[in-house]
Each structure stands twice: as structure tokens, then as C-alpha cells.
Amino acid sequence: MFYFSLFSGKKILKSSFIDECFFTTRDFVLTPSARKDLEKTASENMNQMLKTYNGCRLITAEQVHGDKIEIVNDNISHYPETDAIISNIKDTILMLNFADCTPIILYSKKDKTGALIHAGWRGSAKKITQKTVIKMQEQLNIKPENIAAVIGPSIGKCCFETDEDVFEKLIDDKNQTKLYNRKGKKFFIDLKLLNMQQLYYTGVKNIDICDYCTCCMSDIFFSYRKEKGITARHSAILKI
Ligand SMILES: [Zn+2]
Image (cartoon, rainbow, N blue to C red; front, side, top):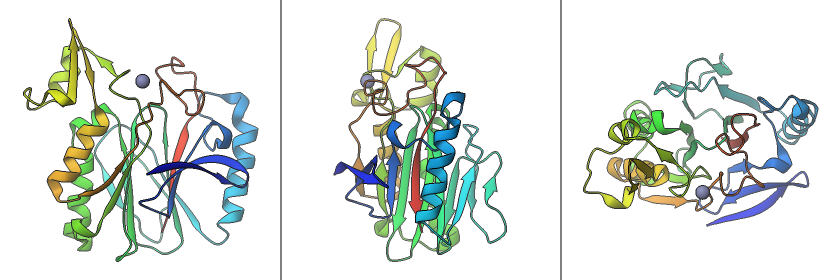
């Protein structure tokens, strides 16, 4: 279940499935991106967050819509050309940024190991979510049944309109009509459901999926599509 809460008095979105994570909103911007006017506010918010998580190390990634997945080590805090980060190091704060793309958070309480995934349509087509679970399993011995997953706010089926080329790359089985709607030559695809299927396929069954569409709810979240690229980012945060 998703619910709004506060972090240092600013609005955030949380899931009851993973206590250690949250999503920021327009009220708590950490990454100004194209919105130069938000740089000062974002810097103040970041200082506030790091002060709250005193003694923790912030881990970020470049996010290039690829499928490179890194396991955090002691020496590196920023991972170039990477779209998913896994950590089992105590007191690391994982952070990735979004404006319509799908954020996926994985966490095993038992193993104190988690991951953040940036899955836009390209990452979803490359099955980055499925690959992250497999990497956690193969390299860190995390059992999928011990992983809770949170699929955060992202552009919904209502607004994610694509042409046939993107549809062809995303939908393997055209009989799965709940994954998309067709209107003439356009397709409306459910990226959250696609990623949920990838989780199911790897054995992760404990999944909280957010109904919110960032494009419909651009008063609360940032939307690349709605704001035609001139937008900041909301962030997914996971503390290990
Ligand atoms: Zn929508």
C-alpha cells in the first residue's frame, strides 16, 4: 500500500512493503536536471537529507536507459552508464532519479540487501528488472522469495502512447492484451505491469505496485512527457 508521508516536513511517497525506501515529490526535489531555477532548493534539500542520514554514503548512477547493473563496493559512489544498483553495505543510501520512467525497489530484510532499478521503456525491453533479481540471486545468494518489491509512480497505460516500433520491442506475446491498448496506429503500454511480470518470472511475488501516473499527476510528480523535457526529477531512495 502506498501513502504520502513527510521527510523533514516535505511531502514524500512511501510503501508499506519496504520501510527503508521512499519516493520524493515536487515538494522535496533533490535533482533539478533541466530546471535551473530549482538548483538552490535541491541543494538545500540534499543537505537536509544527508544531515538526517548522518554518517551514510550516498550512491548514485548515470542512468543511460541501458541494462548495466552494478553491485556497490567500498570505493565507488557513482556508477557511470549504469541503470541498476545493488547494495549490501550498511549505511549506504541508494538514489536514482525519474520523470515518467518506472522506479523499482527491491529489498530483502533477511539479507539486508536491496536494489534500485531505472526502467524506462528501453530498460524494460532489455529486461533490466529480471536481470537485477537474477544478479542478486547468483552473485549474492539472495532468494527471490525473500525479496519484497515496490514499483513506484511512473507514466501509466493511460498516457504512455507509442508507435508500433516501441510496441514490437516491448510486447513479446501479443495475446497478453492486458499489457496494452491499441487505438488505430498507436499503442498504450503498461510499463508497470510489464516489470511486475519480470519480477513474477524470477520468483519475486511480494510486490506493491503504485497506481499513480506521473503524467496525470504532474502536480505532485515530475513528468518528462507532460512538461516536454523541461522538468526536474523525483527520486527513489533506499537506505541499506
Ligand atoms: Zn496518465
